[in-house]
Image 1 (cartoon, rainbow, N blue to C red):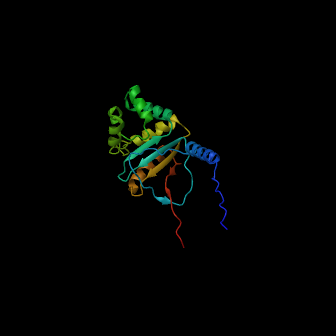
Image 2 (cartoon, rainbow, N blue to C red):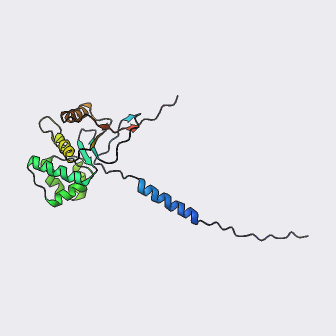
Image 3 (cartoon, rainbow, N blue to C red):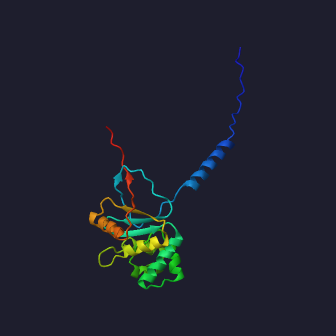
Length: 201
């Protein structure tokens, strides 16, 4: 006797719920993620076991590359504009509204103040190329770094200072940065490091 053929039913899976969950997760990650700032130089931070988080707002970041060049960044455009105006008054430089706008939109700055006008007049792609070869002066004869920090603090008293330096940056450069901060009575700051992996026993 022949076997009766059982008609196969088409399996239907409703993917509506899965689509809803996917969209919700995507929206959540987009809204909670923070964008990494474009930096003029790549630095490899030293490793440490500290897990202290750097605040996301009101941060003055000091970036020091392996050659000792210093760059800075602020997270608020109004702070950027106030600092540039203060530096212009201190050094007798008048910036145009277009130059101020370009400065406030920059993620990082780091050229001598006397070159700032020429730098801001360059197209964006050329500014990126020039910036990595410059740096804020921080020596005994011309310590513009102290002026930038002082004016940044005057613009926003709630600023937290964070230093991000390459692991191979000479100690003398870091010491000079810290001494400059100490001269301004800025004795509290964070050092940005990468998390050291625990060694297996």
